[in-house]
Amino acid sequence: MRGIALRCGAAACFSLMSALLKLASRDGVGAPEMLFYRALFGLPVVLAWVLMGPGLGALRTQRPLAHLGRSVLGISSIMCTFQALILLPLADATTIGFTAPIFATILSALFLAERIGRHRWLAVAAGFAGVAIVMRPGGSGHEVPLIGVGIGLLAALGTAGVTITLRQIGTTENVAAIVFWFFFCSVVVGAALLPFFGRAHAPLTWLLLALGGVAGGLMQLLMTASLRAAPVSVLSPFDYLQIVGTILLGWLFWHQGPSINTLAGAALIASSGFYTVWREHRLRRDRPVPATQPVT
Image (tube, rainbow, N blue to C red):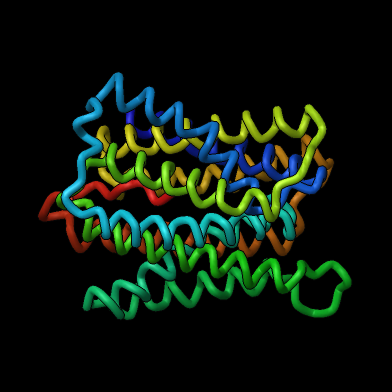
């Protein structure tokens, strides 16, 4: 129950971070700025957790190049996530992001030589059908921007790639090191991009960016803590509360309710995710299910 409560808290922080950053985008904040300020204001939260928990010694790494590769992939993914957030309605962007487990299944088959049965391939097909429904095909005049959908799918693909990478480096690296060095690299890359993409903003926008960064840092810590308290097969279904949270915040801030297409597509994508988790749990119920590291 403690792990589930922490995971629900992480989902709430993700929804809040997304809404705050989307609000900031109305003042011209772009994805590079979101990357920088999310990491800048989130890094002190992560560092405080390290100091109160595992200590600075946990930040030592045996595989710096692996962290660098993970950070490059993760930063590319989160930049696409933020750009999709700018281009798409909040609930749609979040829903498309949940295709990451679908891509992770495909990448596991391609790069980890995992055997994927017909049941999981059917779940993959159902997930992509959900994406097609979210796109609102049919010329109704309410279609979401295809460029936004494409960037959102690229973000999900990148997140899946990070998941595969973390399966490899998570066996030798401390969770604290993985989280801290990703935030540190995000600050460095964001700072390098800031002279080209940064601009002055209203005081309220700076506040939104700061609160969004803190929410992102808390999300990371709550997700990490949840994985220590319960197996990932138990926790993963509660990630879909992010969709509920973004729908509620979208209605609160923009008076924008989800369309029938968004709800139907989200149901298909969530169903494919639930089925994949259930199927994997059933196949592995005779041996412990290892906890995975947080993605971003």
